[in-house]
Length: 246
Image (cartoon, rainbow, N blue to C red; front, side, top):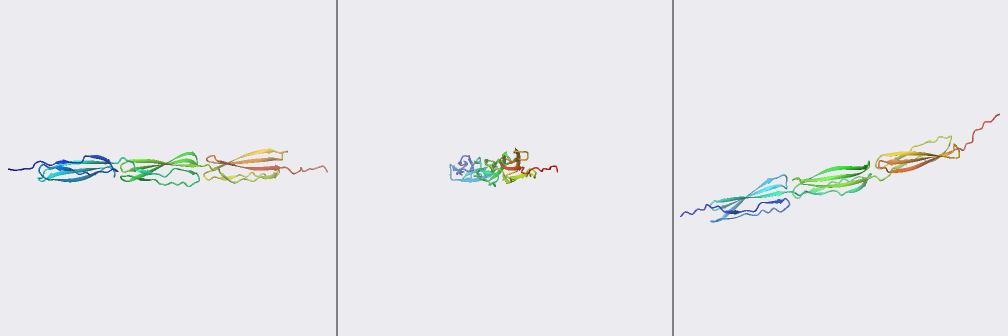
């Protein structure tokens, strides 16, 4: 009586599955039965890289072998994916005066499954030369191409008017004297200053008696303005020179 064993074991393996890289990845065991004896199960795992750290495939090949060398093989495929963008932490938005030193902080990013790279794009929306909104758009990208986008806005305003550094002093002069028409000067904390002057002459009791009002207006690039006034009073207190016959 010749007894032979030509029947391979029956092998039951874990099901294929797809999971996020941040999820649990169960590595369940296989089981096998044989009609005649004991079964040994061998496992060979192969990892196939994908587009990035969080994207790859695990091939698990199970082989059940009985005491007589009959074998059965089966393969489980575990697909690891990364569809979640990185966590991005950006500086808070804030308001500033045009004369302030702007604080341009960096953003931070982390990813559940790998590295993240941050790109920054800065755009400006001007309302005038020294008032604008700066938008800093941060984009965090992980190894698998998932992105997270956040924007910080810095609103810069110019509400301070220029300051006069010098304004010609008021004075009173004889109509026959020199009448200097000096200029005013001004500075601004954020930009250039334009000074306009409007002169108004008010007549007095006679041709040599009058006043000149000079209104200086200093205006910056955003239309903030400061005014100052100089008054020049012209008088005639000198009698005529009289020449009579001898």
